[in-house]
Amino acid sequence: MEGEGEATLMGAGKLQESESGKGAASGLNRASRNRLNDRMLAHFSGSTLFDAIARAVCKAGCLPRKELYEAWEVARRVHRRFRGGRVVDLACGHGLVGQILLLMDPSLSEVLAVDRRIPPSAQRLAFEMQTAWPGLKDRLIMREGDVEQVTLRESDLVVSVHACGGLTDLVLERAIEARARVAVLPCCHDLARCASGGLRGWLDGALAIDVQRAVRLEAAGYTVVTQTIPSDITPKNRLLIGVPSD
Ligand SMILES: C[S@@+](CC[C@H](N)C(=O)[O-])C[C@H]1O[C@@H](n2cnc3c(N)ncnc32)[C@H](O)[C@@H]1O
Image (cartoon, rainbow, N blue to C red; front, top):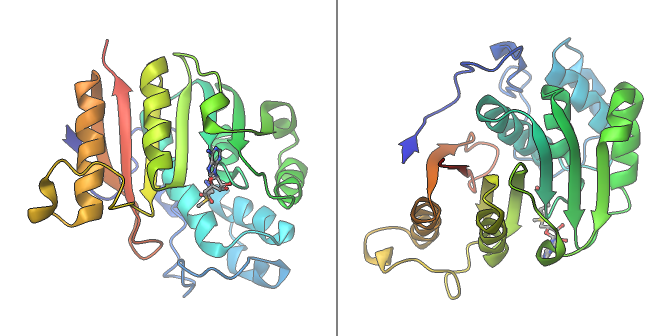
């Protein structure tokens, strides 16, 4: 397993450190669940890709601030590691992470964003993103459905941000079945149901569950990469990446 600390943007193509979405400079609390809206536009007046995305999110007026930062931080780490293919964003909610990946990687064929219940406001977000970047229109498919029902391909890149409890395990299972690349940011660890491999005497329960997930991926023939996104955005910040070994 390969562990990586906080992001340096090595090999990130065109991304610059100034695009890291840092909130400290603007004094914003990045963990806030308040919805971003027009009144917040002035906080994102810069010329970076992050600022432009944040402005589209503000105009849509539907996304909690922390979700913007979570999606950005996950997308930039995933982009550093993977290029091309189709992104399948499972339990996608508003589907922002996939849309950011489309902006970062022109070689992606498309994003399929799937959720059991797509929030009606996801359309507003997609509209604002497509107004800013018309090229996104033909490359984003949002579909209501269950993670169980999605047909995955080996060439896919499966991403899932905060799929609650055992849903993260299902996402990993589905990716492993297809031998697809995968990146998950787990949340709501279910200590009663999710496997922790007897490690809870040594490790915090949620950590034990995520360690087991990493072990499972490696046993399935994946190279595992463990990272974190900044903890001031969310304490559920462990990013687990799996790259199928040849
Ligand atoms: C905590 S939200 C995360 C949403 C989004 N990924 C984000 O980061 O904001 C979990 C999402 O999982 C979806 N969900 C729950 N069970 C599901 C299932 N079996 N198949 C598809 N989506 C599911 C819910 O509808 C919800 O939108």
